[in-house]
Image (cartoon, rainbow, N blue to C red; front, side):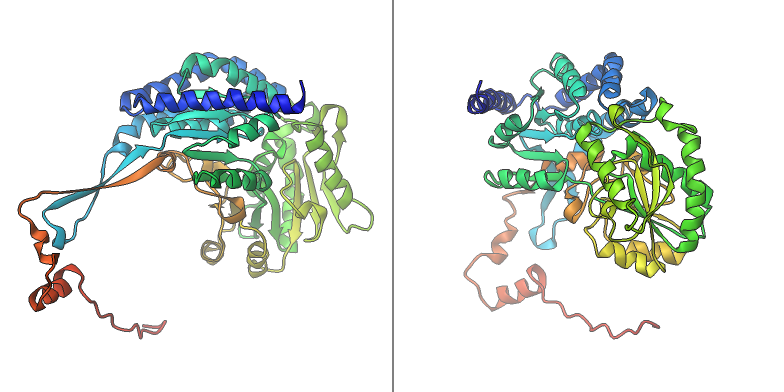
Length: 487
């Protein structure tokens, strides 16, 4: 079959899938609370019934240990489902709004309407979590979903395609494939597109969505920095950084990407990190069942190439620990390296198990360094100094800001997860997912009698003019703020 024939086949099949999803939505079947709860319960049951299939798929794709896979994928999702089911009825209640005196008697509220047919496109690094977590929110909001797992995690994609139809027939349609299928999907009209991945493809998604004026949520990652100073327990900080960085072999969108600190702080951290790594994965991580692998040869080659570039004699970098690799098994040893700001590893998100340490002279220089780059998806600060914490809170912009721990904010269901600027737009998780996948419809109810609106009907005279100025659209005078910082 030619590439053109493949494209035509993909487009025809996908168009039929989207049409079927829209036909289901148009029946109104997805709107009742009972339907939404049933879909969420079915999704939860699928994850539990076939956990071994999904764990095996994650091991095949990424070498994930079953416990890590449960923590970051299956268990993460079942917890999200449980939280959503518990609160959904409350979240869907109309949200009352105050009505001004000039419109009384009346009632105002915001109600959440399903958007319609939602497209979710997921990446490969957490192939279950990053596909199904948005699906949870979309179903809770009463939408019908078309979901595209990553072809770079083929075992996980196949497992989803195998089991989703049995549990969520019609509510969620899985479309497998690569570029032709993704292109065909983006040619269709959706009511919302949720994409997790990189900025290059994010721009393609946004351009395609613009043709139909489709709203988008983009989760795009980026280089998530760490700042550390000497006010913290460096040994404890090293343990948390090693955990957050080397989980999933560094292939995590919110993994610490590099560490900023003074010479003294980084010297202490460099002393503690090797021991922290060994505590997690033993003296030889290559033989640890707890340590993952790069997803494919291209990812392995990219990361080892960056590391090799910065380890050249004239690069000015210094290896702290690690550096080993094995192409046959796509293994890269957990690696810590001192680099400068112009190193190859500092050009783009590493997305692998290499942690650069970059020296700065002060907190001020660290903040300026971060602000001089794209806004990160996450920012991690290890400092017990209230002034330092306040400076990072007030003077930096990031999708999330964590003090004392990396990555863990994803596990707080009440927190929104999302980026800003180059790291993405929009957010989700918990109630924020419901808001993302719903239209917030304004509803105003006013009785016809008594008709208090006669006040603003023409003809206008002096009395109406004075009443409108006073009660309907009053003019306000504000005193200039002449207070000084010492007032």
